[in-house]
Image (cartoon, rainbow, N blue to C red; front, side, top):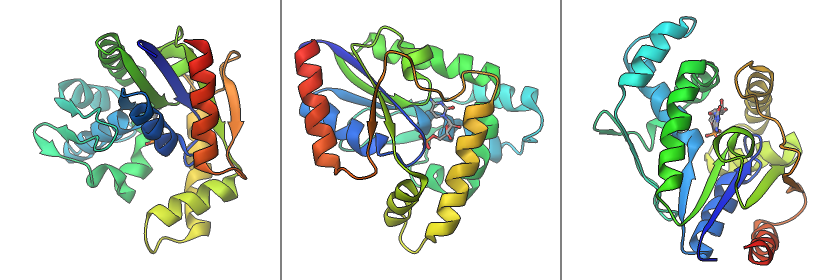
Length: 219
Ligand code: C5P
C-alpha cells in the first residue's frame, strides 16, 4: 500500500511486537511501539523518585520528559532526557511500575497526542499498543487484536529473557493484564471493528502472512 495506518492491540506477550515489526518491514513502513513510550516515561518517573501512588507527581515528570522515539522496525531505539533506555525499559523495575504510570489520565493524554503527531507524519505505519484502535487511531485502515493463552504468552516472554522463570512470567503478565483492563482511562479492550487473531497455536510467519493479505485487500 502507498498509505496506511495499522493498529495492533492486545495483551502482553500476544506477539504484537514481532508481528508489528515484521509487518512494518514488509510494507516498507515505520513501527511505533507505544508501550515503549509508556515504559520510557516510567523510567523517568522512577529516576525522578516520584511516589507511584501520586498521580500529580507522575504526570509532572511525564510531561517534562524529553522522549526520543525510534520508529525503525529493525532497530527502534528509545531515549529519555538524552539517555538511551533500550535495556532499562525492559527491566523488572519498569515492567512492574508501568501499569501504574499508564493509568494516569494526564500521562495518557500527553502520550496519545505525541503518538497521533507521529502517525500523521508517516505514510505507512504500524502502531502497537493497548488503545490504538479505540483511542489513538480510530480511523486506522486495519485494526488487529492479537490474543493468546496466558501460558503461550508466558512461554514467549520467558524465551525472550534468558533464564527467566515461566511461572513467574505468567503471574507478572496476568497482573499487568488485570491492571491494564480494569483502569478507568482507556483500558485494554478489543475494538468492535478489530480482527481478532489468536496466536496460541499458529506461528508468527503465518500471522504476518495472513495480515499482509488482509491489508493488501483493504488498501
Ligand atoms: O506493550 P508493553 O508490554 O511494552 O506495554 C507496557 C505497558 O504500557 C502496558 O502494560 C500498559 O500498562 C501500557 N500501555 C498502555 N497503552 C498503550 C501501550 C502500553 O497503557 N497503548
